[in-house]
Image 1 (cartoon, helix red, strand yellow):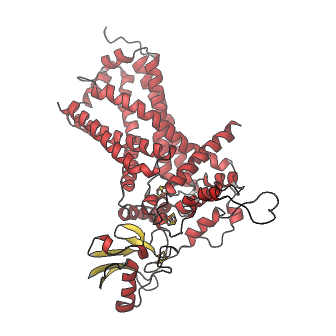
Image 2: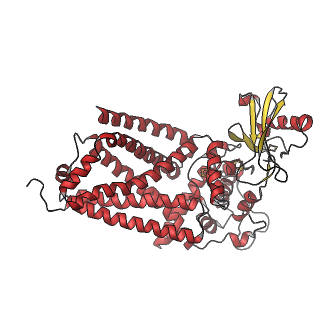
Length: 125
Length: 136
Length: 237
Ligand code: SF4
Ligand code: SF4
Ligand code: FES
């Protein structure tokens, strides 16, 4: 299948199947790609340690102030969306709980909300 | 689309051809479960309990010369990179790249993976086994 | 009155598909399929769609109706709770005309998994015997009417026509679980290849849409686990 066809099929499938599973599939892919990119960014930021403790401290100070501080909330959200959904599909496959996938989804949403509440508390107060 | 494919020929897949897809999928789940634990610990320690800015001193005091933290981060880095790139690979093969594109992309992912792993190990070494004592 | 938005496309004439609107006199208990017949008989004799049994048995009338793949003959307009009914053909297959799609690939994928008993050794003197209990255990895998709802809803089938699809994978488990079948190993190897079970990203759309309330995603989950243990065992030994 041509790439353009496959991509337009993906788009149509998302629009034509507005199910819980489709949303988590899309979110899982997007957050996954974002996190894969983030690993590299993270290593590059921390590589400041190779030029000594001072530059490490300086670099870390830079990424902990201003807008970066608030972006970290987004990062934590992305991490936990991917983690909880990943655990959900793993459990569904391994323990054959496919019929419970919606319950599992609500459970992960609940846990996600709890974690985000803690995150907002820690970051904003 | 082919019509009238002979089922007898089509259905026989050599055993070797099944190993990569199966292991890619399985290791993705296993590393995923480990990473969930690692990442949770990482986020709790570095974001929820951080209480002020993170700097070299604090990281150094926490993990200096600790083989346990070294093992933790070693596994974390390797599994994180593997899980990330294996995930990207599964998205790539979903869109049926041609045989040459597939080879090229796979080589690219390996290159990035190994480069990131080496870089990560250097960083880890710098943070855990470095001899500079920041107190002096 | 119910407004029908119907997908229209004749590849021989039209440059691109369009949605056409029809007003259908809606009676209590009327199904979407009857609505389409109303259009065919009273409003536009050129409308094309498939149907046969009108009793959710043949699987001909699967289409996308108001946000989900369903059987038109089994969906009452009333139950959609909407003034408009939007009807589209099944995705991932070429459109022949309007709501009729080319299902060649869907059935070719089913053929690939050898949907028949593979025998070893001599044939039994009379038929292959199967106990009632053995048959009961296959019920939830056997009831598939091959309507194509799951195939249309599966995002993995959308990116790769060689992905076997939920229907064919569920059929594979039906034969692996059948005590009369001796092709288990070969079947497992076949579905663990790149276009098999591991293309499934556990989206559950197949379970969501199946008009027979089957669960292909569960069959696929079981196949995945079997495939993993099989491969690990082969690697160790
Ligand atoms: S599994 Fe269900 S949705 Fe899929 S073809 Fe069979 S009956 Fe239709
Ligand atoms: S669970 Fe798997 S087979 Fe079913 S629709 Fe989703 S990707 Fe397709
Ligand atoms: S017409 Fe046979 S299933 Fe709808």
